Length: 67
Image (tube, rainbow, N blue to C red):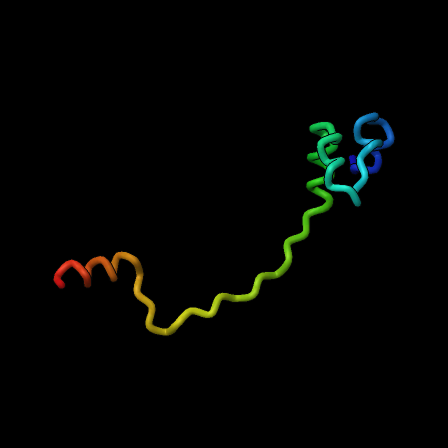
């Protein structure tokens, strides 16, 4: 079942407006689950550029132990 099909039958989900974030509280549990599964968008993240000479936390701790 899709969210649009569910919203036709559900009174609380009919009042939901995707343009207004304050109306998310009006969704029922089933409608919220359907809405979230259909409208997931994860933007691509920029890769993190790390320096070549990078030590782990354990390596730094071991090096600092004998100073």
